[in-house]
Amino acid sequence: MDIYRAHVLVCGGTGCSSSGSAKLIDRFNDKLAENHLEKEVKVIRTGCFGLCEAGPVVIVYPDGTFYSHVKPENVDEIVSEHLLKGRKVEHLVYTDHATHEQNAEKKLDDITFYKYQHRIALRNCGVIDPENIDEYLAMDGYKALEKALTQMTREQVIDEILKSGLRGRGGGGFPTGLKWKFTYQSQADQKFVACNADEGDPGAFMDRSILEGDPHAIIEAMAIAGYAIGASQGYIYVRAEYPIAVKRLSIAIDQAREYGLLGKNIFETGFDFDLNIRLGAGAFVCGEETALMHSIEGKRGEPTARPPFPAVKGLFEKPTMLNNVETYANVAQIILHGADWFAAMGTEKSKGTKVFALGGKINNTGLVEIPMGTPLRTIIYDIGGGCPNGKKFKAVQTGGPSGGCLPESLLDTPVDYDNLIAAGSMMGSGGMIVMDEDNCMVDIARFYLDFIVDESCGKCAPCRIGTKRMLEILNRIVEGKGEEGDIEKLENLAETIKSTALCGLGQTAPNPVLSTIKFFRSEYEAHIREKRCPAHHCKSLLQYKIDPEKCRGCTACARACPADAITGTVKQPHVIDTAKCLKCGTCMEKCRFGAISRE
Image (cartoon, rainbow, N blue to C red; front, side):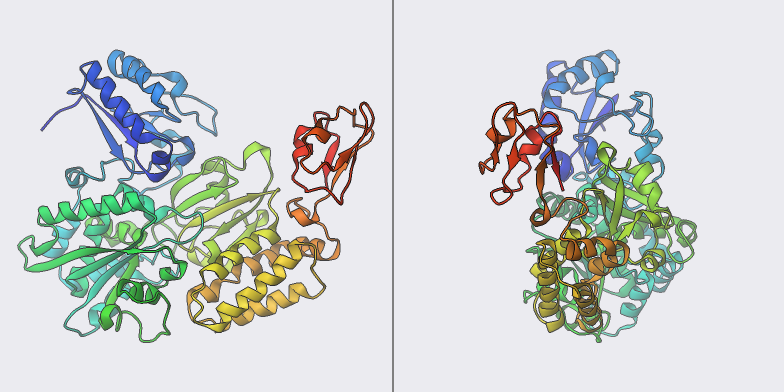
């Protein structure tokens, strides 16, 4: 085995890849060869480090120097200074958002973004080469599978998952061990294990990052689940829009088969288990378990009424156990370290950790994994660094289109299943979108409902028709055509849809509308009664004005206006013709004297 004095880890997740991290790897390899360092320093493409805002990210070990926003032209300096002469390139070292320090001696866990986190599901992301099974094995990979197959009965495996308190991380929060137990108890000649890697929530990329950074963790967990319930075949349903995840998952499955960790007689125990990948076309409804299974079978992806539940009658009408990627990512660690270890983290009813994709109006966009019970305030301000440009925080949405928007007054809410539901939102799969003072909450509700209307499978009338009617009302409101009684109509429609829709997509579709009405009702009223958007966002309700006291008559606004809506002579105050104004904001951008305001 080759021994290297240094390792250069380059983020190969989707975010950093789109920013050119592949070019960094090529440049590193070329420069190392030029300096005859290729036998001393190894370059490794990893999964996501989590701190997406800092990408492309490069970490040099063994010292752990964290370089951010690295460009191909920076590689020469890192090689010549750091790797050849041992001098760290200070100006490329990550600047901690909380301390404003650029300290090359800081380790990863000392950086504010990471120090509040506890990584279990993300433990190997950004640490190993996801395309090299030997690196996963070196991190205790497949030891849990070996332990389960050689030291534990099926019942003991299920009992360990039950005792751990692990709940489904896909949104519903159903006890994972209970789901395994029900499927185990079903009698059939064939059973299946399935993984939901569809991840359709806007702004969510937790599952994608785990598959890209640690695919063997999912393969190992599914094999353990297969043993526990008595299944010999598994399916991973992943959206085709995740090409890097699909590629690495395919490589990992081939490697596991080659090593005898998938296939026949695993660990010479007589247990057979294999996996196949099924690609989805990106339909949001296929995140619902019955719709997902129909899609795997090659049928139209639409839900069916339950019971019977998949544990009794699922894929190909056989008992099927389905969990999402993040849920599986915890399984091997629970088997390896024990239920008590996992249950010691989190809260009484929400054990362990939760991964969130932190996005929107936040300084540190990225992937975070925090112990259950961590307050929203810690996630948004300590880990996320607050809103950019000194803007005031307004709301955070958890749970994607199925969740709700929580205001500043609820920032001290502990993040767990029950507290988020009590606050008016939900955990969901793990999207967390932050909004600042410039966001209109009525338009936010309209955006999510527009998404739902687009993604509804159309099978049941409450979702197909009800959400469409709600969207029509919201569109009228943001266009300045709202009427008295519209808020009440929205509430009535929402409650009807919640109680009558066929599946979880329809039942939770009204949540963003109900939560924004609950916490930001005044914004709805301003749109309807005053024909005014308090956030100055809704275009139809905007009006641009020129303050004659401040206007110098420089003509910059008039020359830039695409609609010729501004008139006036040189050195005299100008006027905007509101009938012609396109409300594009160009005049406001061009004015150097602050004479133009938006109301």
